[in-house]
Length: 431
Image 1 (cartoon, one colour):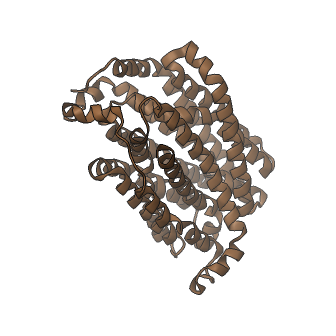
Image 2 (cartoon, one colour):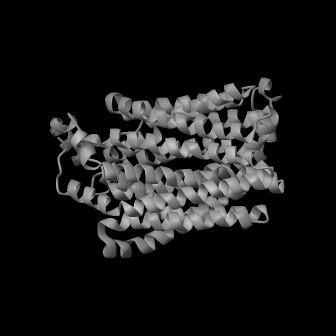
Image 3 (cartoon, rainbow, N blue to C red):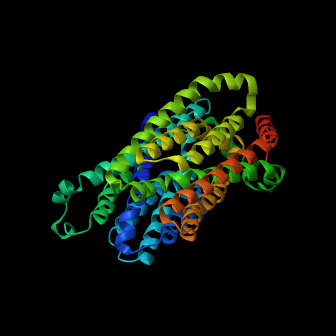
């Protein structure tokens, strides 16, 4: 049952990635059809999707703790499916912005709920392995989402014959949004079938209700750790989004690449880079663990972000779309091992009784920072005279500065992070 539950969670994550990537892949057709500026595209991807996802994370985390994680997650999947379909029916930027916000609010459930569900599905001893499997599958699923999006766009003429007659006259990009929304209700139903197990960790938390009364002491004692980790990861995501979101637009605008071709090429680069990064992580992390102990997670994350910053800088020197795809794959290879360590790091620095709410609050910080990426790049691009090269320069500036800042912040907080983990491992109790 544990394997089945994790598999369903991965399926839900892939579905969310597909919806999100369709919004990215169709940015250029939407811009022409609805006469949008780069700033509006940035608002759509940033404030419309990411920021509302961050705002919804904390209340969704509270609802999940109170009414059940499976029920709330299934409801959120249904919400973002409906919002995705709505993106294909709108006729102006305000309505499109509202639909993107609905997608973001539905997807806000992924981090706080799934990270809370995994300890319910597997034992405490197997939790790091389950986290790693889920994150790796989720990363590969993200690439699969890009590739499936490209494949869908490539075969929409055939697919259009299967849709109701009233929808066949829609623009291609509108039909694509409606098609990717179809699996939503089925995935929501699968989530409700997930069975749970009561881990020892969860039983200990429920057996000690006094731990739930107040977490102020824990937050005060570990403020530097929490702020550094949440802000650092948020800055890293901001930097990665600067290229992940805008490279499809750059490829289309600079080299005339078709959206379907971009989706398949970037999806392939994503999955190959992720597999290479995971293989490297499997080979190097045991050695690092022996040499660095509790500092391993921080050092791997810092190293990966530093390499990713260098790769993003190289985007300035790409002369064809194929080179952009290769650099995107190298970026994914650099950040895969660090990304696999993030869930366990977040769980290790938070006590059991406060974990869901602490991660939800951290998700708000991380998503709020990530939501700034599309807007920063779009606004900087509009401010530059040369639209094509200006967009490329804007994406690189935002990406490099954010990734480098994240690496410096996390490296400087390494001592505080280790201290927090040691305290919790020694049985620190929140008052």
